[in-house]
Image 1 (tube, rainbow, N blue to C red):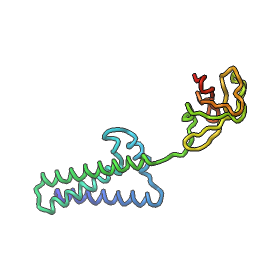
Image 2 (image 1 turned 120 degrees about the vertical axis):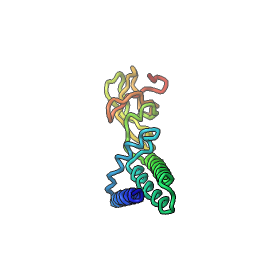
Image 3 (image 1 turned 45 degrees about the vertical axis):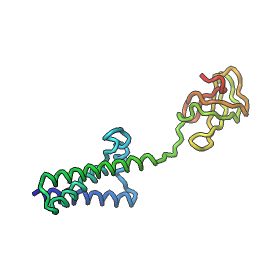
Image 4 (image 1 turned 90 degrees about the vertical axis):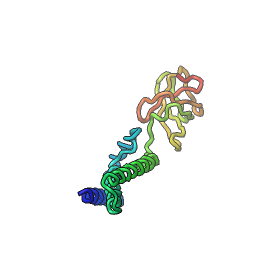
Length: 181
């Protein structure tokens, strides 16, 4: 009876693993979002993912099959199976967490511009009286934003500025480096 349970776990887990592998190879990796949600959390749940669970079930079955085939008693076989499943789950979970950390989104987030230094290339009128343009290096690339200032003085072309606030996705508020809020 125990051997049948181990065999069932190994077969079901193995089949699900092969389906996941096939879907990943053709670009229909339905599991990626589920893994990302789990791997963003910390602690034990930081390594828990659908792939890790499938690995645990598969290796539970394989470990149990090897143990029972070797003639070990039921309690020892279950212990070996549980250990193999837990080890596989932790290994796959940590691997998925590592791989997920390598992902780069590439989208610019305007909120990440706050605190960055840039240069005015189209003058900025004083007291939020209109917008000019600035250029800065953000997330490894040169970008430009519409810019406004609360300063009572105009910020002329070539002025050094610091982004102090995001007004909207295309517009930021800037100040001279010494005048930061």
